[in-house]
Structures are given as C-alpha cells and as structure tokens.
Amino acid sequence: MQHIKSEQIYQLEKRYRTSLINSLIGYRALNLLGTSSRDGISNLCIISSVFHLGANPPLIGMVIRPEREHNDTLRNIRSTGQYTLNNVLPDWYKQAHQTSASYPSGVSEFDTCHFKKHYLKDFKAPFVAASNIRTGLELREMIELEVNGTTIVIGEILHILTEDSLIGPDGTIDHGKAETITVAGLDTYYLPKAVGKLAYAKPGVEPHLSGTNIKPNAEQ
Amino acid sequence: MQHIKSEQIYQLEKRYRTSLINSLIGYRALNLLGTSSRDGISNLCIISSVFHLGANPPLIGMVIRPEREHNDTLRNIRSTGQYTLNNVLPDWYKQAHQTSASYPSGVSEFDTCHFKKHYLKDFKAPFVAASNIRTGLELREMIELEVNGTTIVIGEILHILTEDSLIGPDGTIDHGKAETITVAGLDTYYLPKAVGKLAYAKPGVEPHLSGTNIKPNAEQ
Image 1 (cartoon, helix red, strand yellow):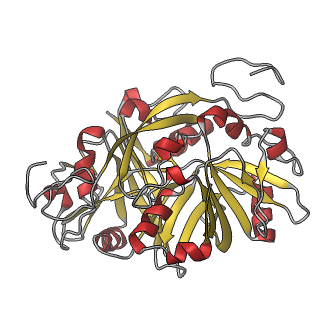
Image 2 (cartoon, helix red, strand yellow):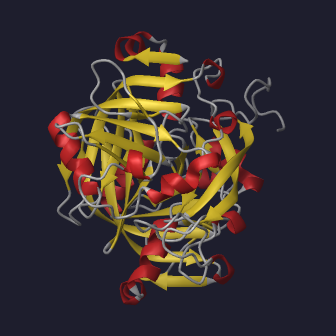
Image 3 (tube, rainbow over the protein chains, first blue to last red):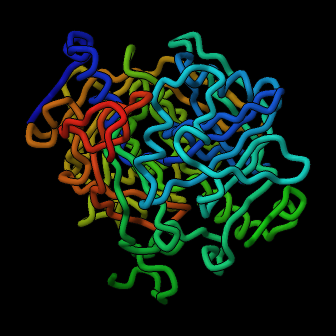
C-alpha cells in the first residue's frame, strides 16, 4: 500500500507531481475545443477538463489554464462568445494530442495538425469535420478561480451534431459505437468497451441491467 | 446526420433530454464520494462530475446537484470539511451504481450497498476499502451557480491511497492495470483498454508514442 500525504505531494518533482495529480480522478471526457478569433483565425486544442453541469438548461463546464495555447482559446471565447467540443477518434488521436503543442499565436492547429473545419450558418466557431459527436456552445459565465488562476467556462449547448445511429432509444449517445477515445492523466489514451447499462437505481431493488425485469428485493 | 438545435433540445421529453445531454461530453471520471456527518453517520454516492483543477496546489473540482441523496453529501462536506474519492472496479460496479438510489437521510450507503469503510487517523471521511485508487480531500471553496442551482466544490488533496504497482515511473497512475471503470451518460459503464501513451507534444515534431525517439519533422 502506498500512502502519499499532503507534505510529500508538495515535495515531489514538478513533472512527476503533475502526472500523478492529473491521473488521480480516472478517465476524463476528451474533446477538441474549437474557436475562432474575431478576424477569423481558427484555433483548436485538446481538452480533458470538460464536465457535465446540467441538462435543463443544457450546460457544460470546462477548466481552462492560463498558459500557452489556451490564451488564444480563452481570448476567442471571450470575444466571439462561441466554441465547439468535438470527440476524438482512434484513427487520429495522435493528431488530436499534437494540438497541445505550444504553437505560436496566430497559427491554426486546424491547419498544422491536419483537421478539416466544418461551419454552421450563423455560428462563429468551427467544428471538427472528422468527429462524429459535436457540440456548439455559447458562453454563459466565466469564473476566475483565485485559488490557482484557472478559469471555469460555462456554456449552453446550442447545437448537437451527430449521426442518427449513435443516439439510443432513451436519448443516450453511444460512445462505444462512436469509438470515442478517453484519456487518463496527461497522455495515456484509452478506448473503452461497454460493461453494462444499468437500470435507474431504487432503494430495495437489487442493481440490474437496464431492460431486464426484476422484482423488489429479488436476487440479482 | 442529426442536427439538434437549441429550441429542439428544450422541447425534448425530460428523461430523453437528460440522457442526451449527460452523454454528450464522453467518458467521465467515475468515483464513489465518501463523507461523514458530524455525529458519525457515513454517506456514499456515485459521482461522475469530478474534474482536475490543478497540480500545484493539488486541487480537484466536482459538481453537486441540490436534490436528493446529495443533500447529505453537501451538508457533510460543509460541516466536516473533508471527503474522499474512490475509484470503481468491475466486480462491484453495480453496487456502486446502487448508491445513486434515493435512500432516506440517515441511511448509510456503505451499509446498505455493502461497502466496507476504511478510515485514516485524524481524517473524518471514510474511504472505500475495496477501491485501489483513493483520494482524501479537504474543502477549499464552494461556488453556488445561479445559472442552475448546482454547487461546484473545490478540494485540496491531503491523502493519496493506492498500490505501489499502480504508479508508473513518471508518476502517472495506471487506471488500465487498476481496472478502473468509467461511465458515459447516466448509466452506461465501460472498461477502457489502453491505446497509447504519447510523448509531450512539440511544434514541428510528429506525434509519437512515449519512450520512442523521433527526430524533428520525421515521419510518424
């Protein structure tokens, strides 16, 4: 058993600590975040700090760090108020990772990392043409965190672009079928396999697979 | 191609919309959140809205909804200032899902869903004994979001409990080896398989697997 305490965490070598802390929470929602500047220069960066905030209104949150390439992203979101999230697929996950490189401001990662843009009429931010689950969002709130200088960006979903075959009968999008990639830590990419879809949990009813009938307190 | 626009999202049947919006961002960090009330009644609930906030100081954020079982959780975090996050494993992911059932206040999901507690000296919140990646946190900040009544809870990592064999040479925790489960949407559980660990991305260097040598601008 390994027990690492607060004071030891602070003493760890910087990159080691970054890898350790980044990998603690488990698998993370992995997306390409697309924006455009006011004068039309597009920007794309991989992001793994996106979280579900609520379905009504439909809101998504994400954490943006102050450094490097994200400066363009944050500036673009501030100035245009719009951005896109696009899932990452196995055939080009390495290209997606490459968008995290520190390209100079003004260089579009769409071009340099070989991603084709897809635009919607009356929506300023570019989508990734090669993704099969895409969301177009409008900025609702930005929260600057004093505790570490990061920014929480909250947006409302204006557009969902996906394939008919990826939406299940109950509305759940099938990321297994879509072949969406996930990440743990900073750089280790994974492709998940479905284990089971469970029914809505109720007190006194054993947990069971969705679509199976089970009596209260019956054996699983 | 399916294009769902904002006005259509608002017209969707409530449960369908909840499933759709919850599943948009992809795979999510899945954890059991352990707390204890001031008078020692433990509480456990499954949570998939945890996000990495920063490594220095080591911070983790999570979204807590105002309804149902999470009331106990939020009240416990407010009153004791401490909580734990524990990864979910294949053998008992159904029990973990069951903690989302609406048990009456005062019922411990540790007992009713058959989880053994693990305590550390001088730390109030219980860990899940069966998990192999566990974090003990102390509350740093709570942000009430007016936009939808949820609360963002920010905590600093005081304790990491895991196995030696799960920490890689660079500090990254190996969730593949740990067999950590992930979730997409509300109820579909997945077990990821590693695709590749990539090297730190640099402009002008093709993306490549970590540990392989590659010259600038060489073929992948």
